[in-house]
Amino acid sequence: GGVHASLCLEEAMGRVDSVVTGEAESVWAQVLEDARQGLLEPVYAGEFASMEDVPPARNDLLTSGYAFGSIQTTRGCPLDCSFCSVSVFNGKRYRQRPIEKVVEEFQTIRERLVLVVDDNLIGTSRKHIARAKDLFRAMIHANLRKKWICQATINMADDDELLRLAAQAGCKGVFVGFESPTEEGLAEVGKKFNLLKGRDFKASVGRLQRHKIFVVGSFILGLDTDERGIGKRIADTAERYGVDLLNVLFLTPLPGTRLWDQMKSQGRIAANDFPSDWRYYTLGLPTAHYRNFSWS
Image 1 (tube, rainbow, N blue to C red):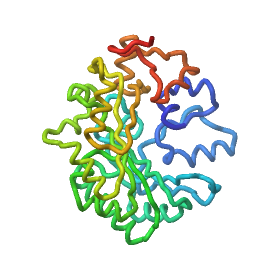
Image 2: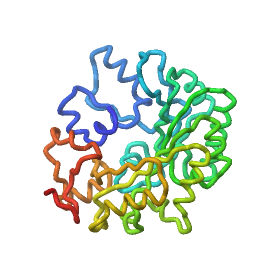
Image 3: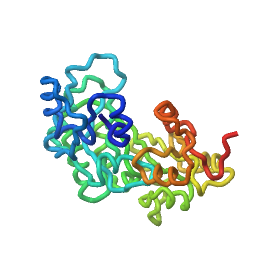
């Protein structure tokens, strides 16, 4: 199961006895019962889970020795960027777990450092952000004594109360997808959120840092609109924004995304000897024929 098996179903079915597609909560009990009876179906189609019904992680079964614990508090993303598989696998509706269940699960994590694996912890609407504030207040009240990092859109910096609460709740770092230093690049990947007029990215980064939250700024290399010198332009932009750490990834066509469909129809997927070529799909290696880049 998982993202790859769900979006590459035929490939997965050729290698295993049974595949679970989508989110597993709605079918997992049936999978286990069928396995006990030796009657596994070839495919089980999971539905988008009700976040109220998502069970807590069994952290008590994990052995020690991990640098980070992990937790998920939301699923789904309404932004629907062309390169991203999140909205394909988890849907475009932003779904949130009950705050009390999140806090209870946090308390079972042994590690002092925690990675919040949500694709966007705070969401995009006022309602989403109000819930994030309530979550942080509950975490503060529970005195979790955890330090954690997360992913979020840059609008996290727009609300000083949100930042103050996040820092008090233990937030030490945030991964922000800036994606491109150009408006053309942002429009290409569909990152409309970053195209909002009047956004001062340097000031936004500075507000996060004033609350002792470090910023990892991520950019994509290999867009059709990228021109000669884009690498230096990305580096200069990251320096101008003042991010603490620069993360640069190759534009990677992932199955199920609009980018995959586009590049496949154009014959531009270079690493296409599957399944062996999946080893190149790390986001750190080139996998496509990029319009303004050569492989030599």
